[in-house]
Image 1 (tube, helix red, strand yellow):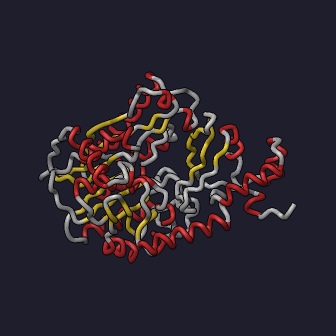
Image 2: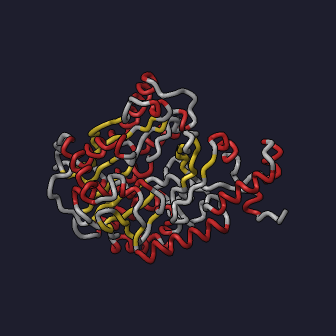
Image 3: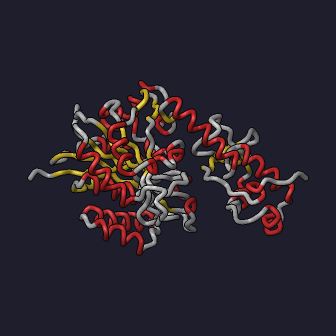
Length: 406
């Protein structure tokens, strides 16, 4: 047997999204989708579901010999498995690094990230516009008093979260003019544990959303190139792009400032100044926006709880679980609405974030940047019916940040 490269002999699998698929005989398999699609060709390894616990062992800590001894899986099989994963870009190592460089070369050549979640309403711009318009037409006018500074909207798929997106975006008056929109997202799959930004725009079915380069360069002048260290994370991150169809419908193609915001609940891996922290970023963003001409709006792309067997809980989702989740969500939202940001973060830390709120960082940042009074517009737990909903529950909320007249 030829020598095994070090990154394959002690394999560390990159984040992937498991997607259930069936073959012609109706047998169930799992496609290991790369959220960033580094290869750019959609190449996706497919494995039997029973292999997933084996994949979970590939954390860069054990060699193939150790994994073979611990599981009984033949080493020859493991060598083939990690080879397939490596070729697909799903192992950390030189091949993934090469694919990352090539993917970012394509982004920079186009000055924009390729279409991803911006196609959530469809790739046809006319049909996609109709989907968003229908959701908005069905939403009630929240009749916001005061000046609307920004919103919190979900980053769920539209099937589960469409009405909550609409509740948030309905806050904006028809025909309102803005100079730029800041979208604060959640870093679900990337390696960066600090703020992640880019100088590039985002392709959508409606055309390319351009970045607000002046504000971004203002931030770079104060915080340095550290802001862009992990911009590859934006390639597969849906929480930014999924807002763009709504922004297009309400405002048109306005310049955007996109940033993935880390959770203040989780300390940075290394406090070495190599990346921009939450505490550094928020005041600099406020300053840059205060100096920018025109009107700015801020959107926090945020989901709340993640509960159920899909997220590691033992108990399937039922009516009583939903009640418990809602009660806890509303207790946290009450603290957030009352304005005590330190207590909000402290409560989540003390509770060990047991319901897995995934967007604490961008919600808190949006509140601090706008300095607005938050108002709860809608709370949602998504659909109840269907067997899949017993496995996972993701909650969301629509909020508005408002400046009341003095």
